[in-house]
Image 1 (tube, rainbow, N blue to C red):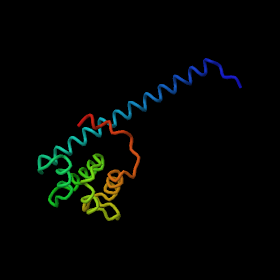
Image 2: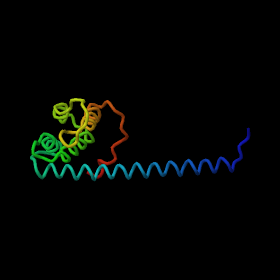
Image 3: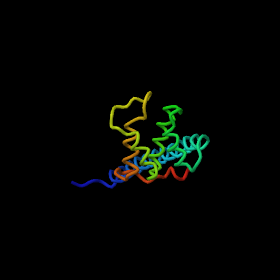
Length: 131
């Protein structure tokens, strides 16, 4: 079956537009992740000593901190994928159901552990440009 040059040209344009939209979404998400990491890292560093990872680890382990902040710190540690976080992530991970009011989110802990151990595919971390 013969496909006309006009149809091929239209298909290339559509493919280019879809690819461009996906790239814009990816870049937007990367920037958003970077800003989120910057914010939660700064919150942790304002309260605890050490570098970004050490402060986030301390925030996860803080019994008097808001559970929401502790959950955000788990998310941030998963994004950063620093092996220093593994002991604290494993300390709170029990594989049970999530209860965001009373305990750190098990789903986020599992993801953070998997990402930090390198057992999950992730696209390149363009958000690191924001940090």
